Every structure is written in structure tokens, then in C-alpha cells.
Length: 194
Image 1: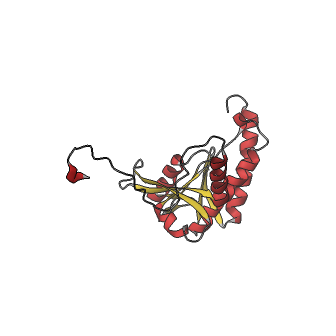
Image 2: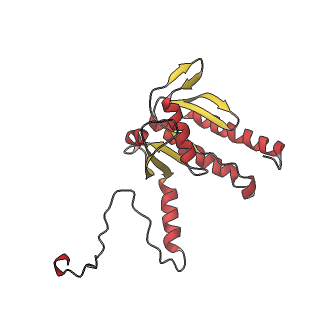
Image 3: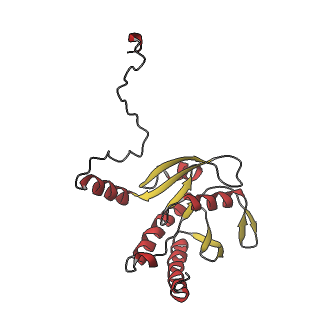
């Protein structure tokens, strides 16, 4: 923001209009804002995750005409759980978990908890990458975390990876658990270990 505060604020305001409209169109409500952060509540995990994916696509499109140093990228975290309501604001561990998930997301990316994943995985045609259990600040139990990307983005990334000239790298891992069996070499010298 330091280089061009007025321009940055103008671009941030444009992004907020995009985000606010998408939250409303996915049946969400904004509970709180502070600076460049937005806390939104949804009655459905499906609506929340679809809104996040649609928002990142729209925000990426808004960045398209700008030089990379002018891009404004959001990180989105989603968790499902009970909250405490005071006025229009929301409080509780569920809010803290969503905030911690947001911090784990890549710029322009989405992270969801295992609880949210369980509710949307069979409904939304998205790619979920298991990031494992993460210990997050001020939450006693580890939280299972998944990154979320649109199916076409993952397919495009895999295709460009495979088509890269001279690419002898292994293919991307599948989104389902798999097992690779590699040959072992007996280094003990004991023939029974063969």
C-alpha cells in the first residue's frame, strides 16, 4: 500500500464490491470487516465453499489487467461449527479456526477444515488437496486442512505440467490415497531378508 495508497484503496474497494456481491448471491451475510478482512457467515458449507471458489475466480479476473506488483490477492479460510453471536458480530473457536485456515491458504487460495470437507466433498466438483493435520494458534486439537481448487484449474495445471518441454518430473499425485511400491535392496547381507 505504501507506494500508492490512494490507488491501492481504490483497487481494494473494487475487490470488496466483488466479494460482497458474491457473498450475498451465495446466501451469506457479512458479520464483520476490519481493514482488508471480511468475516462472513453462511447457513450451508456448500454455499460457503462455492462462494470462496467463485470469489477467487472473480478476484483473479479483476487482477488480470494489472501488473503483478499491483495484484490484490485474498486468502480464504472456511470452517463449520457453532459460533457465539453478539450484536451482528460472531465469536468463538470456529471463527478462530477459520481465521487460522485463511492464514494457511496460499495467496489467492482457499483452505477448508476437515469438518467442511466432509460436508462438501461429494457435492462440489472441486479438487481437494489434503494438507494434513495442522496445529493452529489458540486451538487445542489439530485441525485437518484441505486446499480447494476448481476442477478445471487443476486439470489445466496438470496438462501444462505434463506438456512442459523436457519434463521428466513425476506426474502430480492423485486426489485420492494411493500406494506406490518400490523395490527394496537388501543392504544387510542376510539372504533371509531378500
